[in-house]
Length: 81
Image (cartoon, rainbow, N blue to C red; front, top):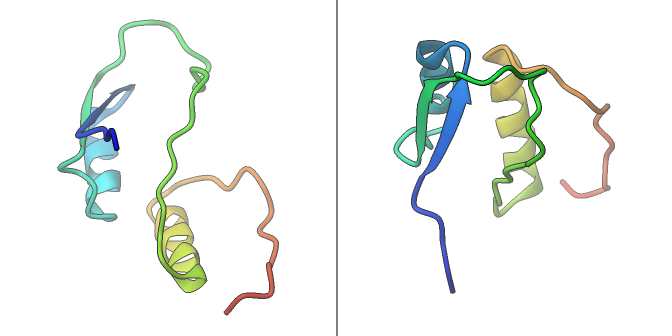
């Protein structure tokens, strides 16, 4: 199996982005640097994080929202708990 060891993100505010990803414990896998190209915020790719339990999704989502993330879709329940 192939795997990715780090992902580099170009962001407007590297310090804020670094602090955001630190809350999830993934900061050792993500490098941030100042963005140099104009952008509207989305550059055409998505990263995902796989977790073992549905409640872990709730925890990560709430942590992201508490850290300043914006929800793009309303949460739907799958019946798992």
